[in-house]
Image (cartoon, rainbow, N blue to C red; front, side, top):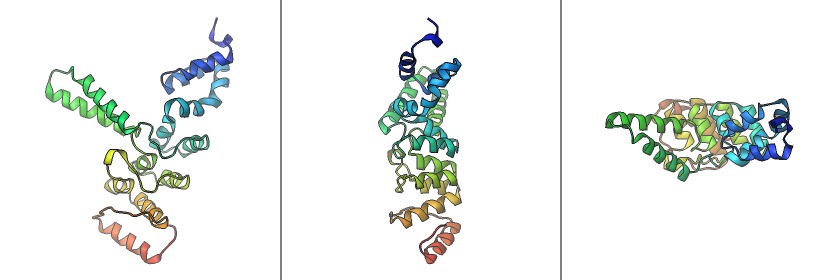
Length: 212
């Protein structure tokens, strides 16, 4: 029996047991009939089976249209795709995989590179933190408007979203976050050494409530 002749319910069951979003996409692209069946369900399947990893990817790549589609479909805006415990497990697994490299210096280099690549995916971080990290003002505004936590919670005790945006030099994002937190009464504790930030924020405070 060929794939196009399988019952719809069986194709959906295959999709729900796929090990990765890439496998679901590959299945959807197999034939016109599987595409017609699975394409409208791709976002829901990603949310259900893969912790909305597609939403993380959309934020990481500054794609507000796709991010909005995921949020409209019910994706959680405040829970990272990968929990802190899962993140630590992944990093331990990376270290075990690289343990086979004989040279200690090369092994440490490989471990650092692999862990950095994993962290750069944004899967371990809240969406607001990821948007601030890449410096996307429009994505930060979208996430705040859709209910992202204004406290800027971040992974495993790391700096908050505002601090990361400041460290990366994303001035516009810093001001958007600071203004949003002040408007909603969120305590802000971050040290900004730049005179640029102090000047602009002093001006904002003097002006009172309002958009930056």
